[in-house]
Length: 301
Picture 1 (tube, rainbow, N blue to C red):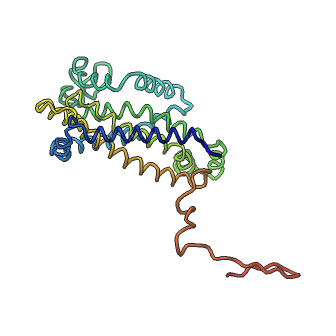
Picture 2 (cartoon, rainbow, N blue to C red):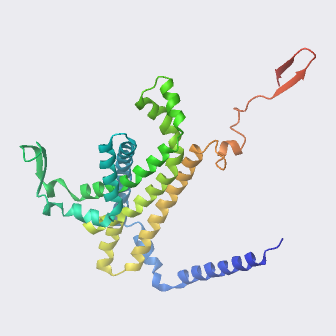
């Protein structure tokens, strides 16, 4: 059957996209020469490096803390459940921007941070809050604490997706809780955990731009420092958008490959190897079956 409506819609969308591309190329207000000039500017590249560091380090700590929080949420200990639930309630219920600003101004509440005996006892280790919470520390801690609340729910959902009889089978084999979690539960849960985790990594890359409010020179703040002096706002924002789009595209490709790896054997997630018929030299030999009156034998072909 011919679908004339789809054809008309496709032609209309192509005309819109072509007109938009033409206007972007011919519009001198975009200042493409300025965009190209700042695309590999040293300050922009330094800011991009800081953004990638924030993403990798912040996400690493967020994943580790998220696994711990998910374990507390699934624990039979009511205290651990309550504390983890309160943590998730707070960090998921307040915006990341507010959390960063509060951490940046924490010295107004606690002029000094330290480790010591509780309830006013002697201090063993500590220092002024502004010395402990530097710009990098505030950015990394703020991003990690906020993201860990979401990672905890992602990990918890993945762990709950593993059937209960898997844990019972591991216990029957003599495995303790740690071993069964590491060898049986977590590998199966990764199939559910990996896709949303990839989305969170991409989100972390973009959320890291919020650290510009505390004057940490990430990619966005580096561009802001330039266009506040040159007043070339749009070209610099185009440069920032280009690098964010490039990084998210690369992360998306890696995410798809990881999802395909952990989705082997699941309908709709056929691996590349399976689609291509396996690697050359690793194919199983064909078998020729010969039936007689007494037995059936298989001979290698």
